Image 1 (cartoon, rainbow, N blue to C red):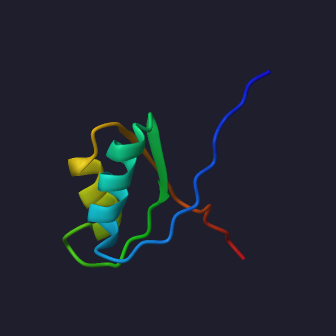
Image 2 (image 1 turned 120 degrees about the vertical axis):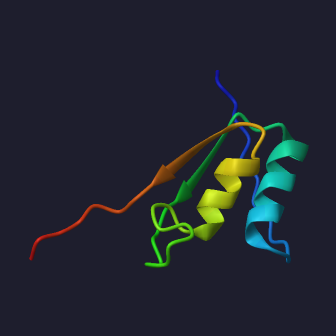
Amino acid sequence: MDRRKLHILVKGGKADQVIVEVAKKLKVDLIVMGASSTGSKIGSLLGTTSERVVRHAHCSVLCVRPPKFNG
């Protein structure tokens, strides 16, 4: 039987730094996070937090955007 662990952690600090730090400590294989653009030039494709995590994470990072609805 496959037994996977789920960790829920609430921690203060800069989001990108905390995500990278905790992922490294827990030796995760993949970070999955939402990507939202703020419209600024920095992080315009991913959002600044996602972009920083991608740059500094020791493992793979999957950034997911919500689907666009035409309605």
